[in-house]
Length: 290
Length: 284
Image (cartoon, rainbow over all chains, first blue to last red; front, side, top):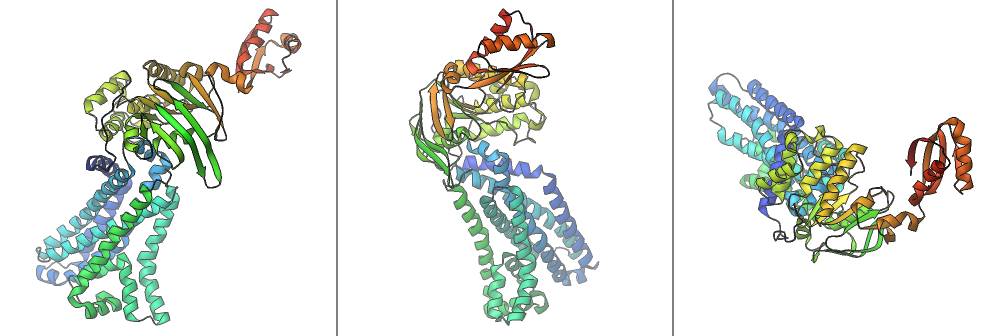
C-alpha cells in the first residue's frame, strides 16, 4: 500500500446516498437492540389484548363496539408511543457523542446534515416498524372479530400514531442536541413525556376548572399538545360522542365542524416537522462542538 | 500538506488551543507531544471539523472549514480506542466505513488481508484485544488509502505487546511516505515514528525539534529505579553521587534522577564500578 495523492472529488452538499448509509446502520442497530424489541412486544401485546378484551365475540356487536376498542387503542398509543419516540430520540445524538461514535462518523467525508438525517431516518424507520407491529397485532384481532368493516378508521389511527411517534422522535432529538450525557437526555425526555401525557391531560383539566379557563383557550392549549392533538384527530375520525372527546373536543367539533380533523392533523404535522427541523438546525451549526 | 494558522479554540473562558500555527509538508511525520490537557487532541478535532475554531486550517489546499467533506476524504483518523461499536462485527465496521466513503467491498477485502484481520472478521469489536482494535481502527482509516493520517494517542490504552505491534504498523505507514500527525504523551515512541516533535503546553507550542533533541530542549528528567543486591547499594549510591547524580536508597535498590536523554550514563557508571544491576525500571 502506498500513499494516495488524488482522492475522488467529494461534493460538500448533503448526498442522499450517504444519508441512506447512515440510516441503514441506525435501523440495523435499533433492530438489534433488546430494548427495541421489548417496546415492540409490550406495545403489540397490549394492543392485541385490548382489541381482544374490548371486542365481543359476535361480529355484529363487535362492529358496533369498535369505537370502544379504538378509544382503548388510542389511550394505549397516548402513553406508550410518545415514550418510545422521546427516549429513542433523546439517546440518538447524546449517546453517540458520549461514546465517540459521532466523532468516528464525522471523521469520514460525511457532513452534519447527512449524519443528522441519516440518524433520524434510521430511527424513524425503526419506530414506524414498532408502531406497525403494534397495530398489526391489534388489527389482526380486530379484523377477525369485526370482519374488517372498520379498516379505514383503524388505519387512520395507525397513521396518526406513526406521525405522533415521529413528532416525539423530533422532540427527543432536539433534547439530544442540547445535552452531552445520555442520562441527562433521557431524564429530560421522561419529564417531557410526563408533561405531555399526564400534566397535559389531568393537569390541564384541573387548571381549567380552577382558573375558569374559557373553553376556547382550553381547546387551544389542548391542541398545542401533540399527544392530545393525536387523540382528538384519532377519535374524531370515527366518533363525535361527547364522552369520548371531552369538553375541549366537543367545543372543537361544534366550532370547527368538518375542518376539525384537517386543523388537528395540521397541528400534528407542525409537531412532526418543527422539532426535527430545530434539532437539525442546532446540530448542523458549526458552533456546536462534537 | 497541512497548514494551520493562528488556531485558537476556547471552551467558555478557557482557551485550550492558543494561537497555534504549524506547517506539515507532504510526507512528513509530526508528533504533537505534551501532557494531558495540552490541547493536542483539540488540534486534531479542529482539523477534522468536529469543533468550531478561530484561525485557518488548510489540508491539501482545501479550507477545512468550508471544504470539510473534501478534507476528510483525504484523511484517515485513528482514535485512542475503537470502543464505540462494541456490538458490531469487525467486517461490519469496515463495510460501514467503506460505504460512507463510497468504496467497494473489494477494498474492504484488501485491507482485511493487509492488516491480517481475516481470522477476526466475524468477531464483535468488544471481543477484540486492545491491539486488534487499533489494527481495526487503522484498517478503517486506511480504507481510502489517504495521503494524511491523524493518529490521536493511538497507543495510550495498549499493553506493552499491543503497543509494540501497533508501533510496527505505524513505522510501515511512515515508510510509505504518508503525511502523519500523531498526538502522544509517550516520549519513547516518538523517535521511531516521527521526523519532528511539536511540544505543547496549555494550548501553546513550547518548542519544535527532532524527537532526539526534545528531552534536552525541555530539560526533561526521569527517575531510574535500579535494583541491585543489598550489600552493593551503599557503594552504588556513592558512585552515582560522586558523578553528580542524586540517588536515594529504598527497599529494593536505588532511585536516581537523571536527564531524560542521559539514562545510559547511570548504568555505565555502575558497570564501570563493577556493580551488577539486577533489574531496571524507568519512571517518567
